Length: 140
Image 1 (cartoon, rainbow, N blue to C red):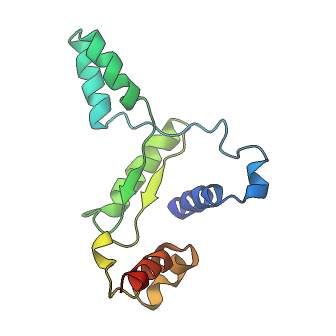
Image 2: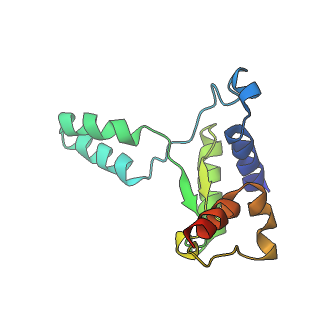
Image 3: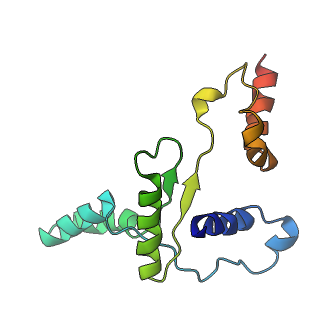
């Protein structure tokens, strides 16, 4: 449930209308989670330990930034465990994790693609499948 709430919050923020654009950013001041187990973070730490200051300073520009955890059908095995681990780590730091949720794979979007069936009604509501359908119809 917490994952769904976080995704809903990020979706609402991403779909702000132009009227809301003039208001204050609801995510301003929110600390986004930086994964200290990411490859870039581990590489930065290795450079610091070995005294390679110049290389460490360069990789730090990447390592210090929050990045989304991309999840979808490809996130196997243990999707729940991977997402829970990220949420728990973020909460422990008082931060908000960032997720990118992929519903459809690009291999399904071709000239004859007509959506994924009744189970994707919610996805159609946010335009993901409909934009793929539009591009498929214009290609034929």
